[in-house]
Length: 282
Image 1 (tube, rainbow, N blue to C red):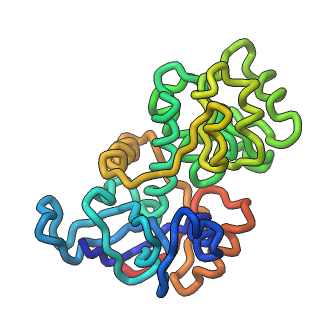
Image 2 (image 1 turned 90 degrees about the vertical axis):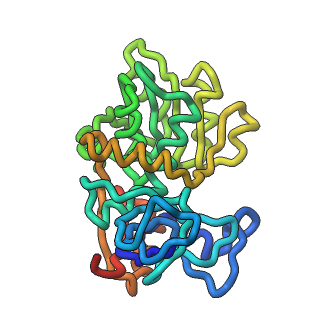
């Protein structure tokens, strides 16, 4: 389908692709339009798409094996499995900020089989993926979610339903002190920096550790997840939104022409929630 873009989410992977850091895994072809997150309006559909028509409002994670025709533009193309309908509970900017981060969080939690009664640690919990992971873990039935962050984000994490812990040296000890006899069943590494190895002392089963930042995690018995487009998973996240279990924190919106400024802000690594580019009026 052809989508008229209303808003596009900004993710660290966008500037990493442009910088060439991911050439081995995701080759790019020029001219290269970045961006994988989109919220927009269906302009036209192919002959095999029968459940969407012109004018339908959608959100999606538009990723192909080769990076070229992304979402930082007036139009983008998407396959059926990449999109779902925009939830009634999300504005355009929030809908553009949900797909990649929400899918990443959800697929990580599925990988470690988080569910009813789980005790989950989310490393780098105040960022785009982390804030989704905290809320989604709670929506999936976790009894406790512990989130690592800087102290300035403690109030934000508590508002999302997490118990905050300062990251940095001594982090594992601080988590253990907070547990008060409970046992961690799952840990999500969203930052890297050796966290997977640290979590081996905290999680009884290494399979309960998943990373999106350390591709060597499987060598330690943990899991590595690279998010995949999945319309069914997006629909689940949309239901969580409509049920009041998940919200999208947009830290800043900028016009498309200021994408470079958005990347500078994303690269500083201190963004709470999501940065979104506004492309057009709906």
